[in-house]
Image (cartoon, rainbow, N blue to C red):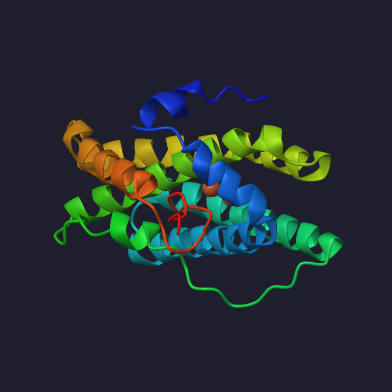
Length: 202
Ligand SMILES: [Fe+2]
Ligand SMILES: [Fe+2]
């Protein structure tokens, strides 16, 4: 298994076991939302490519990332088809929207913050794939473990781009987003999603 200890150390909390239990009770929903997350990851990367056309490093890294996310999307869809899981429209989790709230509006701060949020989301996704993998059937486990390497690289690419765009130490900003992320991940959610907190107990 790919070593993701640097990602577990980066994040401020581990995925709660209660979320894993919820996921195991909602495997179809996990796959549907996972498919949406991959699609969204590709479009976020492409949005950056449209906005920051003068940043060669960003263009290259985001182009590769978008291709990989779309490939993951195809892989999730294939697994859904194999398992007879339909693909209905579902609302996105509140996670990304909440995480984006502290993004500053003036440049280059805006870019730096968007890239940090990208790093945090990639890191959490990677941590969740690794956390749930041991509990999954062989097929799904193999697929989730195969994603660790690319998602870990995406996290690093985002963080390096953020550091480069800032030109100064970004640890204060990283702390802002990681602290918020910990709160979101540990707060109970009404609906299960790939990036939700544990479900509220009735
Ligand atoms: Fe992905
Ligand atoms: Fe990714």
